[in-house]
Length: 116
Image 1 (cartoon, rainbow, N blue to C red):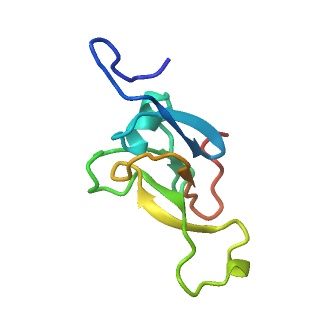
Image 2: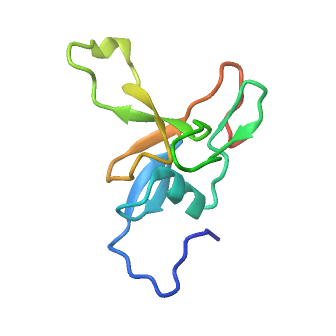
């Protein structure tokens, strides 16, 4: 069960993106945070104390929803330095979903994956 409002709503065809390797259904125009919440995912990462964190303000002020997004290699970067590709930190509440998007939890050193 998700939290997406469906009654009386017309949307374009859904798209899929990946969060920690799992396929998540979303709609064009949604943010990553909105799509994850609609898919009943509220824990995006763990903080230094191991506590689960997710969206707090949901408007780009607090940084509680930070994730890592796979991005293009910066110009001049050597791919060998990034064996998994180049990842950059983004706020899920400000990042719109798109086809092929890959996001993952941004873990504090020594913390466990939010799915555990």
